[in-house]
Image (cartoon, rainbow, N blue to C red; front, side):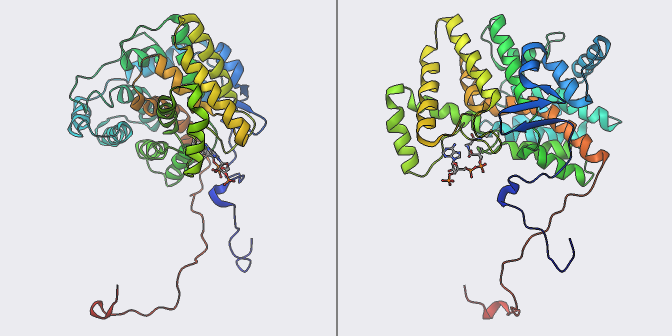
Length: 375
Ligand SMILES: CC(C)(COP(=O)(O)OP(=O)(O)OC[C@H]1O[C@@H](n2cnc3c(N)ncnc32)[C@H](O)[C@@H]1OP(=O)(O)O)[C@@H](O)C(=O)NCCC(=O)NCCS
Protein backbone atom coordinates (compact mmCIF):
# COMPACT_ATOMS: atom_id res chain seq x y z
CA UNK A 1 0.00 0.00 0.00
CA UNK A 2 1.58 3.32 -1.00
CA UNK A 3 1.67 6.27 1.43
CA UNK A 4 -0.41 8.33 -0.98
CA UNK A 5 -3.26 5.80 -0.96
CA UNK A 6 -3.60 6.22 2.82
CA UNK A 7 -4.15 3.48 5.37
CA UNK A 8 -6.16 0.40 4.45
CA UNK A 9 -9.66 0.63 5.94
CA UNK A 10 -11.03 -2.48 7.63
CA UNK A 11 -14.57 -3.25 8.85
CA UNK A 12 -15.55 -2.17 12.36
CA UNK A 13 -14.53 -4.67 15.01
CA UNK A 14 -12.11 -6.18 12.44
CA UNK A 15 -15.01 -8.43 11.39
CA UNK A 16 -13.91 -10.84 8.69
CA UNK A 17 -10.33 -9.53 8.71
CA UNK A 18 -7.56 -12.11 8.98
CA UNK A 19 -4.83 -10.64 11.21
CA UNK A 20 -2.42 -13.58 11.52
CA UNK A 21 -1.45 -16.99 10.23
CA UNK A 22 -2.12 -19.49 12.98
CA UNK A 23 -1.63 -23.23 13.39
CA UNK A 24 -3.43 -23.38 16.74
CA UNK A 25 -7.14 -23.61 15.93
CA UNK A 26 -9.81 -22.56 13.46
CA UNK A 27 -13.54 -21.96 13.77
CA UNK A 28 -15.62 -21.50 10.62
CA UNK A 29 -19.10 -20.28 9.75
CA UNK A 30 -20.17 -23.81 8.74
CA UNK A 31 -20.03 -24.73 12.44
CA UNK A 32 -16.67 -26.49 12.34
CA UNK A 33 -13.89 -26.09 14.88
CA UNK A 34 -10.47 -27.74 14.87
CA UNK A 35 -7.66 -27.62 17.40
CA UNK A 36 -4.32 -28.23 15.66
CA UNK A 37 -6.18 -30.07 12.89
CA UNK A 38 -8.38 -32.28 15.11
CA UNK A 39 -12.17 -31.74 14.97
CA UNK A 40 -13.56 -30.63 18.31
CA UNK A 41 -16.09 -33.50 18.45
CA UNK A 42 -13.26 -36.03 18.09
CA UNK A 43 -11.32 -34.45 20.95
CA UNK A 44 -14.46 -34.17 23.10
CA UNK A 45 -15.22 -37.86 22.58
CA UNK A 46 -11.71 -39.13 23.25
CA UNK A 47 -9.25 -36.74 24.85
CA UNK A 48 -8.58 -35.65 28.41
CA UNK A 49 -8.14 -31.99 29.34
CA UNK A 50 -4.39 -32.46 29.78
CA UNK A 51 -3.98 -34.19 26.41
CA UNK A 52 -5.88 -31.39 24.71
CA UNK A 53 -3.89 -28.73 26.56
CA UNK A 54 -0.64 -30.40 25.49
CA UNK A 55 -1.93 -30.50 21.91
CA UNK A 56 -2.94 -26.83 21.91
CA UNK A 57 0.30 -25.67 23.49
CA UNK A 58 2.78 -27.99 21.75
CA UNK A 59 1.12 -28.65 18.41
CA UNK A 60 0.68 -32.45 18.61
CA UNK A 61 -0.83 -35.08 20.84
CA UNK A 62 1.54 -36.26 23.58
CA UNK A 63 3.05 -39.70 24.08
CA UNK A 64 2.38 -41.33 27.47
CA UNK A 65 5.70 -40.07 28.82
CA UNK A 66 5.15 -36.54 27.54
CA UNK A 67 1.66 -36.46 29.02
CA UNK A 68 2.97 -37.62 32.40
CA UNK A 69 5.71 -34.98 32.37
CA UNK A 70 3.22 -32.27 31.34
CA UNK A 71 0.74 -33.26 34.06
CA UNK A 72 3.48 -33.46 36.69
CA UNK A 73 4.73 -30.07 35.56
CA UNK A 74 1.30 -28.56 36.20
CA UNK A 75 0.97 -30.30 39.58
CA UNK A 76 4.44 -29.15 40.59
CA UNK A 77 3.74 -25.52 39.80
CA UNK A 78 0.27 -25.19 41.32
CA UNK A 79 1.49 -23.87 44.67
CA UNK A 80 0.37 -20.26 45.11
CA UNK A 81 2.52 -18.06 47.34
CA UNK A 82 0.60 -16.97 50.43
CA UNK A 83 1.49 -13.35 49.66
CA UNK A 84 -0.66 -13.70 46.51
CA UNK A 85 -3.55 -15.06 48.58
CA UNK A 86 -2.94 -12.12 50.96
CA UNK A 87 -3.34 -9.62 48.12
CA UNK A 88 -6.51 -11.38 47.00
CA UNK A 89 -7.88 -11.24 50.55
CA UNK A 90 -7.14 -7.52 50.83
CA UNK A 91 -9.37 -6.80 47.83
CA UNK A 92 -12.41 -7.70 49.94
CA UNK A 93 -15.61 -9.54 49.23
CA UNK A 94 -17.05 -6.89 46.90
CA UNK A 95 -14.25 -7.46 44.38
CA UNK A 96 -15.22 -8.98 41.05
CA UNK A 97 -13.65 -12.46 40.74
CA UNK A 98 -12.00 -11.66 37.40
CA UNK A 99 -10.47 -8.49 38.90
CA UNK A 100 -9.19 -10.66 41.75
CA UNK A 101 -7.57 -13.17 39.40
CA UNK A 102 -6.13 -10.43 37.21
CA UNK A 103 -4.58 -8.74 40.23
CA UNK A 104 -3.21 -12.09 41.41
CA UNK A 105 -1.63 -12.82 38.02
CA UNK A 106 -0.02 -9.37 38.06
CA UNK A 107 1.32 -10.12 41.54
CA UNK A 108 2.71 -13.45 40.31
CA UNK A 109 4.62 -11.49 37.68
CA UNK A 110 6.58 -9.89 40.50
CA UNK A 111 6.76 -12.82 42.93
CA UNK A 112 7.33 -15.88 40.71
CA UNK A 113 10.91 -16.99 40.42
CA UNK A 114 10.71 -18.91 37.14
CA UNK A 115 13.88 -18.73 35.08
CA UNK A 116 12.49 -19.28 31.58
CA UNK A 117 9.54 -18.03 29.57
CA UNK A 118 8.30 -21.64 29.28
CA UNK A 119 8.47 -21.92 33.08
CA UNK A 120 6.55 -18.66 33.48
CA UNK A 121 3.85 -19.88 31.10
CA UNK A 122 3.56 -23.23 32.88
CA UNK A 123 3.35 -21.45 36.23
CA UNK A 124 0.49 -19.22 35.07
CA UNK A 125 -1.32 -22.22 33.56
CA UNK A 126 -0.90 -24.31 36.71
CA UNK A 127 -1.95 -21.54 39.08
CA UNK A 128 -4.85 -20.04 37.12
CA UNK A 129 -7.28 -22.76 38.19
CA UNK A 130 -6.29 -22.32 41.86
CA UNK A 131 -6.77 -18.56 41.54
CA UNK A 132 -10.09 -19.07 39.74
CA UNK A 133 -11.46 -21.47 42.35
CA UNK A 134 -10.46 -19.09 45.14
CA UNK A 135 -11.44 -15.83 43.50
CA UNK A 136 -14.49 -15.48 45.76
CA UNK A 137 -13.52 -17.52 48.78
CA UNK A 138 -10.31 -15.72 49.64
CA UNK A 139 -11.54 -12.11 49.17
CA UNK A 140 -14.57 -13.19 51.22
CA UNK A 141 -12.26 -14.05 54.12
CA UNK A 142 -12.34 -17.85 53.74
CA UNK A 143 -9.30 -20.11 53.64
CA UNK A 144 -8.13 -21.12 50.17
CA UNK A 145 -9.13 -24.50 48.79
CA UNK A 146 -6.05 -26.15 47.38
CA UNK A 147 -5.47 -28.70 44.62
CA UNK A 148 -5.05 -32.37 45.50
CA UNK A 149 -2.14 -34.07 43.82
CA UNK A 150 -2.96 -36.72 41.23
CA UNK A 151 -6.64 -35.81 40.72
CA UNK A 152 -6.29 -34.46 37.20
CA UNK A 153 -6.94 -30.90 36.08
CA UNK A 154 -10.73 -31.01 35.66
CA UNK A 155 -11.54 -33.05 38.78
CA UNK A 156 -9.19 -30.92 40.79
CA UNK A 157 -10.78 -27.68 39.65
CA UNK A 158 -14.26 -29.06 40.32
CA UNK A 159 -13.40 -30.19 43.85
CA UNK A 160 -11.96 -26.73 44.59
CA UNK A 161 -15.07 -25.02 43.18
CA UNK A 162 -17.77 -26.98 44.96
CA UNK A 163 -18.19 -29.46 47.74
CA UNK A 164 -21.10 -31.16 45.98
CA UNK A 165 -20.30 -34.73 44.88
CA UNK A 166 -20.47 -35.05 41.12
CA UNK A 167 -21.03 -38.38 39.36
CA UNK A 168 -18.44 -39.85 36.99
CA UNK A 169 -20.54 -38.70 34.01
CA UNK A 170 -20.86 -35.18 35.40
CA UNK A 171 -17.13 -34.93 35.95
CA UNK A 172 -16.63 -36.11 32.36
CA UNK A 173 -19.03 -33.41 31.15
CA UNK A 174 -17.23 -30.73 33.16
CA UNK A 175 -13.96 -31.78 31.55
CA UNK A 176 -15.58 -31.51 28.07
CA UNK A 177 -16.74 -27.97 28.83
CA UNK A 178 -13.21 -27.06 29.87
CA UNK A 179 -11.88 -28.53 26.61
CA UNK A 180 -14.33 -26.33 24.67
CA UNK A 181 -13.29 -23.26 26.60
CA UNK A 182 -9.59 -23.82 25.99
CA UNK A 183 -9.10 -22.26 22.60
CA UNK A 184 -10.94 -20.39 19.87
CA UNK A 185 -8.64 -18.86 17.25
CA UNK A 186 -8.72 -15.04 17.14
CA UNK A 187 -11.26 -14.42 19.92
CA UNK A 188 -11.02 -11.04 21.68
CA UNK A 189 -8.89 -12.16 24.63
CA UNK A 190 -6.44 -14.18 22.53
CA UNK A 191 -6.04 -11.24 20.18
CA UNK A 192 -5.42 -9.04 23.23
CA UNK A 193 -2.77 -11.49 24.41
CA UNK A 194 -1.13 -11.36 20.98
CA UNK A 195 -1.08 -7.54 21.01
CA UNK A 196 0.71 -7.58 24.37
CA UNK A 197 3.05 -10.41 23.25
CA UNK A 198 3.94 -8.39 20.15
CA UNK A 199 5.45 -5.70 22.39
CA UNK A 200 7.63 -8.49 23.90
CA UNK A 201 6.12 -7.97 27.34
CA UNK A 202 6.23 -11.10 29.54
CA UNK A 203 3.53 -13.82 29.77
CA UNK A 204 2.19 -12.41 33.08
CA UNK A 205 1.47 -9.09 31.39
CA UNK A 206 -0.15 -10.87 28.46
CA UNK A 207 -2.28 -13.12 30.70
CA UNK A 208 -3.44 -10.12 32.80
CA UNK A 209 -4.50 -8.36 29.61
CA UNK A 210 -6.26 -11.52 28.43
CA UNK A 211 -8.21 -11.58 31.70
CA UNK A 212 -9.21 -7.94 31.28
CA UNK A 213 -10.57 -8.70 27.85
CA UNK A 214 -12.34 -11.86 28.99
CA UNK A 215 -14.26 -10.02 31.70
CA UNK A 216 -16.75 -8.29 29.40
CA UNK A 217 -20.24 -9.70 28.82
CA UNK A 218 -19.69 -9.76 25.05
CA UNK A 219 -16.89 -12.30 25.67
CA UNK A 220 -16.26 -14.45 28.77
CA UNK A 221 -18.75 -12.67 30.99
CA UNK A 222 -21.57 -14.04 28.82
CA UNK A 223 -21.83 -17.37 30.66
CA UNK A 224 -22.71 -15.60 33.92
CA UNK A 225 -25.07 -13.20 32.16
CA UNK A 226 -26.78 -16.15 30.42
CA UNK A 227 -27.35 -17.95 33.73
CA UNK A 228 -28.71 -14.81 35.37
CA UNK A 229 -31.08 -14.44 32.44
CA UNK A 230 -32.28 -18.06 32.73
CA UNK A 231 -32.84 -17.65 36.46
CA UNK A 232 -34.79 -14.47 35.82
CA UNK A 233 -37.05 -16.11 33.22
CA UNK A 234 -37.39 -19.30 35.29
CA UNK A 235 -40.47 -20.61 33.48
CA UNK A 236 -40.82 -21.58 29.78
CA UNK A 237 -44.25 -19.94 29.87
CA UNK A 238 -42.57 -16.56 30.47
CA UNK A 239 -40.11 -16.74 27.57
CA UNK A 240 -42.20 -14.77 25.05
CA UNK A 241 -42.97 -11.99 27.51
CA UNK A 242 -39.30 -11.83 28.60
CA UNK A 243 -38.02 -11.63 25.04
CA UNK A 244 -40.55 -8.98 24.08
CA UNK A 245 -39.31 -6.84 26.96
CA UNK A 246 -35.61 -7.48 26.28
CA UNK A 247 -35.84 -6.47 22.64
CA UNK A 248 -38.20 -3.58 23.33
CA UNK A 249 -35.52 -2.20 25.62
CA UNK A 250 -32.92 -2.70 22.87
CA UNK A 251 -30.95 -5.27 24.86
CA UNK A 252 -29.23 -8.39 23.60
CA UNK A 253 -29.91 -11.87 24.86
CA UNK A 254 -26.72 -13.07 26.49
CA UNK A 255 -25.39 -16.45 25.36
CA UNK A 256 -26.67 -15.97 21.81
CA UNK A 257 -24.84 -14.93 18.69
CA UNK A 258 -21.28 -15.26 17.54
CA UNK A 259 -18.92 -13.43 15.25
CA UNK A 260 -18.05 -16.62 13.35
CA UNK A 261 -20.85 -19.17 13.87
CA UNK A 262 -24.04 -17.92 12.28
CA UNK A 263 -25.94 -21.24 11.94
CA UNK A 264 -24.74 -23.11 15.04
CA UNK A 265 -21.89 -23.30 17.51
CA UNK A 266 -20.64 -26.91 17.57
CA UNK A 267 -19.63 -26.61 21.22
CA UNK A 268 -23.10 -25.42 22.22
CA UNK A 269 -24.69 -28.36 20.39
CA UNK A 270 -22.53 -30.85 22.25
CA UNK A 271 -23.14 -29.13 25.59
CA UNK A 272 -26.89 -29.14 25.01
CA UNK A 273 -26.74 -32.91 24.53
CA UNK A 274 -24.60 -33.31 27.68
CA UNK A 275 -27.07 -31.19 29.65
CA UNK A 276 -29.94 -33.36 28.43
CA UNK A 277 -28.13 -36.50 29.51
CA UNK A 278 -27.22 -34.96 32.86
CA UNK A 279 -30.82 -34.17 33.77
CA UNK A 280 -32.03 -37.56 32.55
CA UNK A 281 -29.46 -39.43 34.62
CA UNK A 282 -30.13 -37.30 37.70
CA UNK A 283 -33.90 -37.28 37.29
CA UNK A 284 -33.82 -33.64 38.29
CA UNK A 285 -33.15 -30.30 36.62
CA UNK A 286 -35.47 -31.07 33.68
CA UNK A 287 -36.99 -27.57 34.13
CA UNK A 288 -33.64 -26.02 33.27
CA UNK A 289 -33.18 -28.05 30.11
CA UNK A 290 -36.74 -27.27 29.02
CA UNK A 291 -36.25 -23.58 29.73
CA UNK A 292 -32.99 -23.46 27.75
CA UNK A 293 -34.65 -25.21 24.86
CA UNK A 294 -37.67 -22.88 24.94
CA UNK A 295 -35.50 -19.74 24.91
CA UNK A 296 -33.37 -21.18 22.09
CA UNK A 297 -36.44 -21.99 19.98
CA UNK A 298 -38.00 -18.58 20.49
CA UNK A 299 -34.72 -16.81 19.66
CA UNK A 300 -34.32 -18.83 16.47
CA UNK A 301 -37.94 -18.16 15.52
CA UNK A 302 -37.50 -14.42 15.97
CA UNK A 303 -33.94 -13.68 14.93
CA UNK A 304 -32.35 -16.83 13.53
CA UNK A 305 -29.54 -16.39 16.06
CA UNK A 306 -28.16 -19.61 17.61
CA UNK A 307 -26.93 -20.13 21.17
CA UNK A 308 -23.19 -20.13 21.80
CA UNK A 309 -21.04 -22.21 24.16
CA UNK A 310 -21.67 -19.87 27.10
CA UNK A 311 -25.40 -20.46 26.92
CA UNK A 312 -25.13 -24.22 27.47
CA UNK A 313 -22.04 -24.20 29.68
CA UNK A 314 -23.93 -22.05 32.21
CA UNK A 315 -26.72 -24.54 33.09
CA UNK A 316 -24.17 -27.35 33.29
CA UNK A 317 -22.16 -25.36 35.84
CA UNK A 318 -25.39 -24.52 37.66
CA UNK A 319 -26.41 -28.16 38.02
CA UNK A 320 -22.90 -28.96 39.23
CA UNK A 321 -23.57 -26.57 42.11
CA UNK A 322 -21.05 -23.91 41.07
CA UNK A 323 -21.78 -20.30 42.09
CA UNK A 324 -22.60 -18.09 39.10
CA UNK A 325 -19.79 -15.51 39.68
CA UNK A 326 -17.27 -18.34 39.23
CA UNK A 327 -18.33 -19.19 35.66
CA UNK A 328 -16.04 -16.68 33.93
CA UNK A 329 -13.10 -17.63 36.20
CA UNK A 330 -13.59 -21.25 35.03
CA UNK A 331 -13.39 -20.02 31.45
CA UNK A 332 -10.10 -18.27 32.34
CA UNK A 333 -8.65 -21.39 33.99
CA UNK A 334 -9.01 -23.22 30.69
CA UNK A 335 -8.46 -20.45 28.14
CA UNK A 336 -5.06 -19.63 29.62
CA UNK A 337 -3.65 -22.64 27.75
CA UNK A 338 -4.86 -21.16 24.47
CA UNK A 339 -3.52 -17.74 25.46
CA UNK A 340 -0.05 -19.09 26.04
CA UNK A 341 -0.11 -20.93 22.69
CA UNK A 342 -0.97 -17.60 21.04
CA UNK A 343 1.72 -15.82 23.05
CA UNK A 344 4.34 -18.24 21.71
CA UNK A 345 3.09 -18.19 18.14
CA UNK A 346 3.12 -14.38 18.14
CA UNK A 347 6.62 -14.10 19.60
CA UNK A 348 8.05 -16.75 17.26
CA UNK A 349 7.38 -14.66 14.18
CA UNK A 350 6.92 -11.33 15.80
CA UNK A 351 5.84 -8.09 14.26
CA UNK A 352 4.66 -5.32 16.58
CA UNK A 353 0.86 -5.06 16.32
CA UNK A 354 0.37 -1.38 15.86
CA UNK A 355 -2.42 -0.45 13.46
CA UNK A 356 -3.24 2.96 12.08
CA UNK A 357 -6.39 5.04 12.44
CA UNK A 358 -8.27 7.68 10.55
CA UNK A 359 -8.24 11.03 12.36
CA UNK A 360 -11.75 12.48 12.32
CA UNK A 361 -11.32 15.09 15.07
CA UNK A 362 -10.97 18.86 14.96
CA UNK A 363 -8.06 20.56 13.14
CA UNK A 364 -6.40 23.95 13.08
CA UNK A 365 -7.17 25.00 16.68
CA UNK A 366 -4.96 27.53 18.50
CA UNK A 367 -3.93 27.32 22.17
CA UNK A 368 -6.00 29.51 24.51
CA UNK A 369 -4.90 30.51 28.01
CA UNK A 370 -6.83 28.81 30.85
CA UNK A 371 -8.58 31.98 31.95
CA UNK A 372 -9.88 32.60 28.44
CA UNK A 373 -11.57 29.18 27.98
CA UNK A 374 -15.31 28.60 28.02
CA UNK A 375 -16.74 25.29 29.20
C1 LIG B 1 -21.06 -12.30 20.28
C2 LIG B 1 -21.50 -11.01 19.60
C3 LIG B 1 -20.76 -9.84 20.25
C4 LIG B 1 -21.14 -11.11 18.13
O1 LIG B 1 -21.39 -9.91 17.63
P1 LIG B 1 -21.12 -9.36 16.14
O2 LIG B 1 -20.50 -10.37 15.27
O3 LIG B 1 -20.41 -8.08 16.32
O4 LIG B 1 -22.54 -9.16 15.65
P2 LIG B 1 -23.49 -7.96 16.05
O5 LIG B 1 -23.46 -7.69 17.52
O6 LIG B 1 -23.18 -6.83 15.13
O7 LIG B 1 -24.89 -8.61 15.69
C5 LIG B 1 -25.44 -8.66 14.40
C6 LIG B 1 -26.94 -8.47 14.54
O8 LIG B 1 -27.48 -9.52 15.35
C7 LIG B 1 -28.04 -8.99 16.53
N1 LIG B 1 -27.61 -9.81 17.67
C8 LIG B 1 -26.43 -10.45 17.80
N2 LIG B 1 -26.36 -11.09 18.96
C9 LIG B 1 -27.55 -10.86 19.57
C10 LIG B 1 -28.09 -11.27 20.80
N3 LIG B 1 -27.37 -12.02 21.63
N4 LIG B 1 -29.31 -10.84 21.13
C11 LIG B 1 -30.04 -10.08 20.28
N5 LIG B 1 -29.57 -9.67 19.09
C12 LIG B 1 -28.34 -10.07 18.75
C13 LIG B 1 -27.45 -7.60 16.70
O9 LIG B 1 -28.28 -6.74 17.43
C14 LIG B 1 -27.30 -7.19 15.25
O10 LIG B 1 -28.56 -6.79 14.79
P3 LIG B 1 -28.71 -5.58 13.75
O11 LIG B 1 -27.95 -6.02 12.53
O12 LIG B 1 -30.17 -5.47 13.57
O13 LIG B 1 -28.08 -4.40 14.41
C15 LIG B 1 -23.03 -10.79 19.77
O14 LIG B 1 -23.72 -11.84 19.14
C16 LIG B 1 -23.43 -10.63 21.21
O15 LIG B 1 -23.32 -9.53 21.77
N6 LIG B 1 -23.92 -11.73 21.87
C17 LIG B 1 -24.30 -11.70 23.25
C18 LIG B 1 -23.08 -11.87 24.14
C19 LIG B 1 -22.53 -13.25 24.09
O16 LIG B 1 -23.24 -14.23 24.22
N7 LIG B 1 -21.20 -13.32 23.96
C20 LIG B 1 -20.48 -14.58 23.93
C21 LIG B 1 -19.93 -14.83 22.59
S1 LIG B 1 -19.21 -16.45 22.47
